[in-house]
Image (tube, rainbow, N blue to C red; front, side):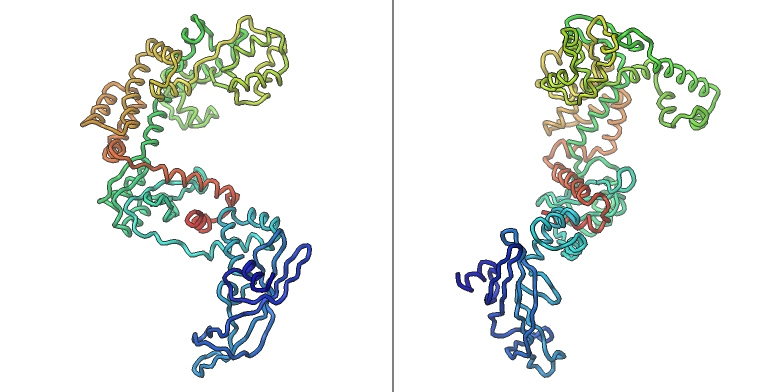
Length: 529
């Protein structure tokens, strides 16, 4: 293979001549020299071919076959023929190969920067060590910081959402061009004033896709009054599901009795006793705590004073104070779901059949859909091993999440058993029946992306008239954000691309161990492909 062919293979598109090639077990050394007849002066730009001297220069290049590549360049120092130039001599720079003071080729520098954007500092450095490239995490981070940031350009359709820098403490805002689905900027906080200032610098924005956060609504109103705000349909469904879940949580007492449609006959299980008929200490403690808190409230004591004197958190005292009765608290306390609940029947029957090996039972229920581990099964079987085997199989209780899932799912996707279960719950509690009706009406409008004239207004009025308080809270929020919600029901704009980038940001933060500052994280968000 000739020198020109080797140059085209190792250094494609670069005007150099290969003079010598040395191969070792760990390294490839390529001695090259420039083929250009002249070079431009770095001071005045005038070309010169008068050589002052030669000097050696070594550059690292991309690895080949797991070996390091060293380019040994016979560099030229030329004499500038321009008498007005400040430089007497200048060093020749070969395009796409060398830069002033650089010890890497441009190709290797671009490769390092690309991997750094994907992996970050430490992971990138570990990968390059395996690829026979000498570098460190600080070098990779410097390369990221040296990359130019893309210009935002014209953004007629904008998506906005927040993400956590430190969850529960500090948040930032990502802005996405919904046409190209690429992030265009990252703001250091989620304040309405910051968002409004950015919008004032971009008067071309005509549509703002967002969730229902108040700061983004206020910022869009102040910074881009000409833009149409569109609430995200997924967030609307999520808000509805959360409201429905809270309603069902307040009516857990109606979930304590198993459904006849699920087990073939009515059964009753006293939640204040365990499966062996013994009183639960948690029940007595809950009743006593409820009595103490309400006695103090009747005397006029503040919730803060009650929490301090009883050594309870403010949240616990507030929950006991606003509960409709102690039964609501007991249902939540004694019916906490576990992953093994749906398999208690199966485990009981298998134990009675003589299978007492926890590992074998775990493998069996995992094939049935169990997602927990063996330790949960062992804890469930501990009373059995102590000789406290119940005479009848324990019945699984309906969980709040499962009933919420039935309500939020499309009715045609429910099984016959689930449909009958919902009908039975509606017969037990009229509040659940009206909640199901209102939830399905709104979910249909969101999913079908249609809202007949005044349909949303009628739904809000109906819910405010006789809906549960959680749904009334949701209706009041929709009424305050009426224009954006109506736009979500009548247009095809969504925040899906923004949510995807928020998920990608979580990956970037984990790669950087959560210790990178905002400037570096912003660059990786905007520059990563």
